[in-house]
Length: 162
Image 1 (cartoon, rainbow, N blue to C red):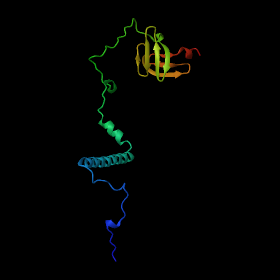
Image 2: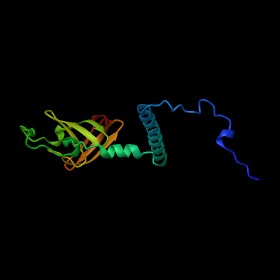
Image 3: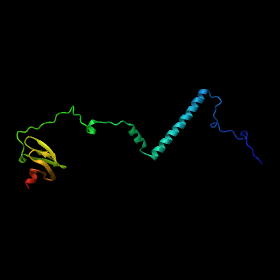
Image 4: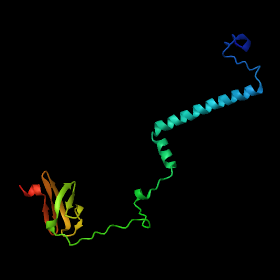
């Protein structure tokens, strides 16, 4: 026994399922088709974007950074414009300082400020200072510090008075 069913035997579909296309003009068909294409394209775009962002979270940021041109700043790269550079100051002394001319002003993080009557010098290990020679070590303490140089050792006044 064969059971054959035709479209005439089925109940009619609800009104919202039946498109009323018999009165559509050519412009209606174009707008409807473009709307469906736009909806499918949007769905595809957001699906692909979501899948990429789940599989590789930094992909879009890396792609954006790779497409940006590098900003080369002469200051950041370390190059120096020697044509427009200001000349370095030349220190002119009446006489060369001797170790007794220096006082420790401050010791901080491996550096020290030394003062004479006429100048203030910031030093670190390896710096060559007139009258003291090469700085060998800098030691900070709670009461000041000690600066050892090739020709002399300076001790802050607070440490020396103890």
